[in-house]
Each structure stands twice: as structure tokens, then as C-alpha cells.
Amino acid sequence: MNRFGCFCLRIVLGAALACALPEPVARAQTDPVLLYLPALSTYQVQSNGQLSLAWMADSSTRLTPTPNGKLLSAIDTGGRLHMIWATLTAPRLLYHAWLSSQGWSAPAAVAESLGISETLYGPYVDSVGGLHLVWRADLGTGATPRYRLYYSRWDGSTWSPVEDVYPTANAFVQAMAHSDGAGGVAITVLDTPLFGAAKAFQITGGSGSWTTSAAIQPSYSGAGVVWPDEAGGVRFIGVVSGQPDQLRVDRWLGGAFVVQNRVSALTLGTRETQLDGLGNLLTFGVKSVPIVGGTGYAAVAQCLRDDGAVDPEVTMATYGTAYVTLVKAADRSDLVALAWKTDTSGLAVRVFAGCSSGDTFNVPPPAPPVVSLQAAAVSAAGSRLCLLWRSTYDYRDLTATCANLVR
Image 1 (cartoon, rainbow, N blue to C red):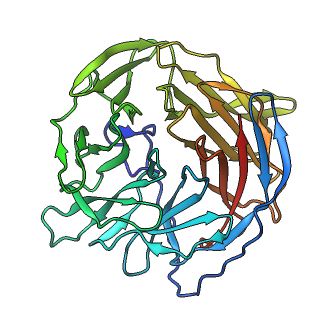
Image 2 (cartoon, rainbow, N blue to C red):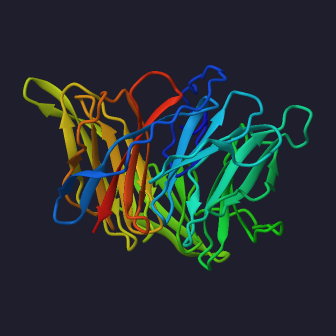
């Protein structure tokens, strides 16, 4: 969850405004890496007419150093699942491991960088399978300015030397790597002071020659979300208070706004969002619904299409005893996957393709049962969907459940 306070309105990269919850505190340890390497053999196929998922055997690992904060995941064009995490163990770097048909790689540092590194958003996967990662570092009270945004690229075997792309005095700075629309990479930044509104910037160039744009100011003020798009643009989705509240969309591309103040009939409320590679915005969340004998919880989703049209709300599942927490994943295509832990300690997933979705899949029951769902990843180019979950309360233990995805 993003670290934003609720004492003022802020713009948030790809997430609705929310009060921060404390990050879980992990225990430091020095255990060796233990790898469990089952063969990635297909064992159950599910299909809904739109796509098929051929599920493979679960693959478990113990992460070292002990992870802390948000776990990041992505699938490259070769179908390999990648994990990136921060740690409380010195040196405070980010670490990376991946899963292939040969099993899990040994964890290794992303790059040698100064300060305390923190994960922000998942890496951008380019057309040749490279990973582009931006993260935040706290250099301590003796540094001026104190905070940095760092960048590195994984070329399939090694990470490039760290690049310092953005210095700031603001601890709440956020950033996301994405396509620049011309075969390169761009970084959208939200620089948020302790008091006051966030300012958006876009950084382009790369290879030590980064250029930062002037501040990008949307037509509305107040709360909202910001999403970089596959064409290299930035989309601002604002909530303008009224009776009823209005959702307004601006789109900045190539130094100018190409869409401004487009009013939408969609109500965002407290829902989360995910932009797909075609510019469709999927909103999702959980709401109370009446059921026999009382009140239940429904996992719902609704799509705002690139042209401004709003699709009907879709109910993905309803449970009577459990409040569902949804985990999202997307890639450069039209795919968005939503996954959650069910009320029977299993896993469920629904895949949207350009706002269209088929049925909800109940994942073949894992053993042991799921304690918490940590992350998800999907890739049309890699033809794979993966869910990352824990079967214990030990932050080091992680299991991947993956499926080959056929459309």
C-alpha cells in the first residue's frame, strides 16, 4: 500500500487515496537459501471459451534476505516469473530471483546503491524481455536532498549499473517505469510534499542522459489516480465532488494534453484501478451485498473504456464469511488479471481482455492451504499467469502457482 496520509487530498500513482497501514516488520536472519524444484509439468486445464489456463505444479522457495514491504512480480517474454523485494537486512538493497523450468534462481542484489532501498511498483517488461525497475532510496539525514529515485535494467542475465534519475526532499515520492511509445523507457514521477498537492513529471532518455519534463498539471484539483500508458502518455483520473461525484479524465502525451476534462458516468469511490495496454481502465473492489441469512461480500469489477464508454459492473464472486482482498496484474497487452484468496483458503482468478471477461476460475486446490496472497503477474507475450502466495506466517516462505495461458 502506498504511504499517503489522509490529512489532505493527493494524487496517487495507480491506486486510490487511502490511509497508510504500517508495513509488516520482518525478522532479520541469515539462513541459507532452500530451493524446492518440482518439474513445471501441466496437470489441470481450465477453459471458459475466451482463454484456457493449463495449471502447473506449485513451486516453493525461501527468500533470503528476509523480505520486507511490498513484493513485486513480473513475467518476461520467455515466460519466466520474476520477484523483487526489499529487506531489513544490511546492506539495504533490493533483491531479485526468477523461476524457470529449471527452478528458482538464487536471490541476488538488483544493483549496488546507496541508502535504504524501497520497492514502489512492478518492473516494466519491454518487447525483448528486459526488466526496467525504478525504486526509492533514503540516503539519511546527512544527504541533501535526502531521497533518490534509482533506475536499473535487467537484460536477461545481469542488472545494469544503478542510475540516479531523480533527487527530492520528499519522502512520499512515487515513480513507475513504462513505455515511452517509441521503443524506449519513460518514468512517470509523482513528487508529493508532506503538505500540499503532488506534482507529476515524466523522465525520458536513459543511459545516463535523462531529461525531466516540466510539471504536468491536470484540469481538475483534488483526489484521483494517475496511470502511465503504453503510448508514453500519462492519464489523470480525477474525482470531482458533486451530486453525484464526477469522474474526469485528462490525457497528456508528447508534452501536451490531448484529452482534457472528459466526464465519465463511472463512480470510482474507494475502488482500485488498473490500466491495460490499450488504455482501458479496470476498476475493482469489494462491496456488501444481501445474502440469505445476512450480509455477504461481492468482488466486483467495472471497466472505463479508452473511448469513455462505461461497461456494466461484473460480479466475480460472492462470499458470506470473508472480506476479499483483490490482487491485480497487467502487462503491455490488453490483459488484466484479478486474483484473491477465497473463503475456503483457496485461490480464484479472473482474466480481463480489453474489458471483456469470461468466468471466474477457482485455482486447483493448493496444499497446504493459502494463508495470504502476495502478488500476481500475467503476460500475453510470455503466455503465462502466476500467483504468489504464502502457506505460513513466515515472510521468507513463498509459493508460486502458474498456468500456461492460451487465448
